[in-house]
Length: 396
Image (cartoon, rainbow, N blue to C red; front, side, top):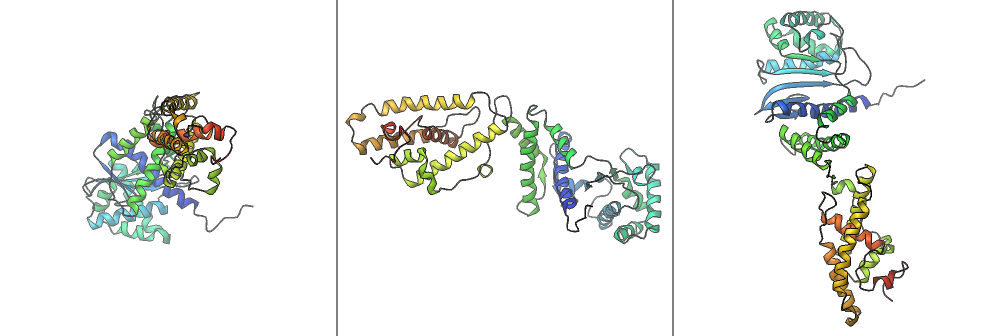
């Protein structure tokens, strides 16, 4: 028999993620109607749409992992009403033109007062709902909902009707997983074949944006235009000719390790006596470029033979430069050869050869390092004599 865990916080965690994910979905939908609007989380309510500190729409988001009824005595109902009645009585929220939404995965039973507060219900339905809620508030003995019930009963009928007129219950709403599918549906037009990747990247960006607001690093309001611009920016990566570039922190930053000295590309840099800082940057470029290529491959974004063609372009450019710089190498001593090798390396390190749409110096430099590791390119004019068999460190 499965035992319950009194410390299980999965429901709460799912609720927090749901709130953030739902806000992103609602923001994507709202920007079509009100492109200059703003959205906030945990300012006026769980989620709110506002303009110049005026809340146009306040939203309570309630998520349940398993199926649940939203009855007239549900704690979710009275906790929500408690928040809204407090704001209503304080006068901080303009009541006449502010909508209040309860978006929940629970389902309101047919005929319940809560079911009569759905967006399409009539004024008569809302009047009946108010009366039923007042009766429930008077009859219930649930201590968890007492504060909300008492506050609701403190309203006059006229005040309660004014509040109820602004309330819209959106029950049986999509759950945590389904909301993500709905977000993907909103984004599918941007990249039909990779809408899942666009969704994943946009949500990652969104969580960072929300986190900054919650810890006070930026103002609470988030312009809806920011969501739209970021969505189009990410979607553009996945167009017919587009590849997304990961942020450095996503790829990881491998620090220098003495074991790196065994790698051929490092030996090649040592052979021409490059400065230590440049060698460590070369190691970083090698691993970042390799990680980015691997990520593209795992996500199925690379075309057949694309990597080989790119490396062939780099090798062709290197051969032209190598041949030109080494044409008089017979007259140079070892110090002269190393100087020539450093010049070739610095040239390669400054190239920016586009990998499809991606033009990043570290992609090109790291790819040259990869070729050097396979001895397809080299820096020292006689690198093949030193490393033709994966040999010594160049001191012979």
